[in-house]
Image 1 (cartoon, one colour):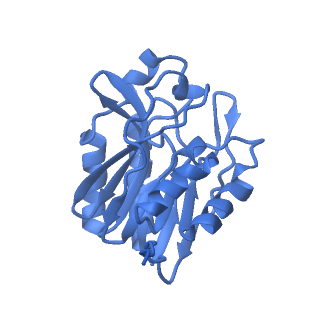
Image 2 (tube, rainbow, N blue to C red):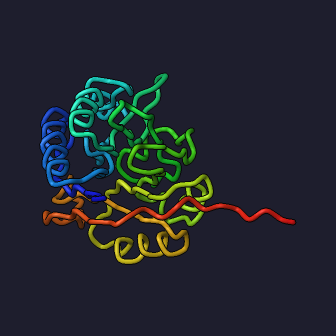
Length: 231
């Protein structure tokens, strides 16, 4: 199976433009044979907002207009998509990732570890800690950016049976997280880890993603961990 990490440029507060790029890249990755396609953190909205009021129009419910359009392409191509966005629910904004399979929207994960940076200064603490999403392409969990700095964030989804940890992220220049975090989480949990970062700049922040293709071929995902029964 192939897994694609789409490292794309995102324009803050240009949701329709970003959605168009997401759909375009999703089609491209699926045509190249990707069964799972992972997009960056806040790929739909941008990240470096200066207030909750500025971010509010870029947030959407799930299901909502953008996730329905992504779901239509996902269904047509028979793949699974993980896409970062701002989720609006009950008057709150969450830094979230929507997980969408061929049969529709499976749900969202909401970021648990928030930095004093960008939208995370104004959004709500994630209240869906580390769910497991069962897809036709394997069982997967989600961390968003800073979440993966904590070993427990990956370990919890592994213990629930995850074969793959997906990380939508906005790692900025100057961070060396990309160099070791994914390898460590993969090694300690014996599972595949895929991170998708942004490229370009946003309000003074430069991101470390690259524009080169990152479609990885994997023969198979590891089997879920089974606990030994005590005799």
